[in-house]
Image (cartoon, rainbow, N blue to C red; front, side, top):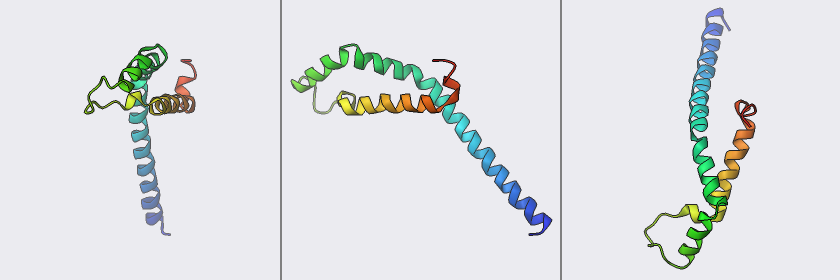
Length: 97
């Protein structure tokens, strides 16, 4: 590899790494900003309202056209669990907990 080829190669590596870091920074900020949503969902699930809505759905009180994936116990539990696991992987939350 010539010096010019080496510079071109490593310049491309640096550009890719910078791009990946930028994408990650944006994603981390979006994730951080979404944490109040996770808290609100957890309160809904744990606070009794979810159970009321689930039972109302089971009784057929909602129209079939209503999107209600949140009433799927597994889906909501999995979303909250995934959020918790991702928080554990992100170091900037260690000081906040």
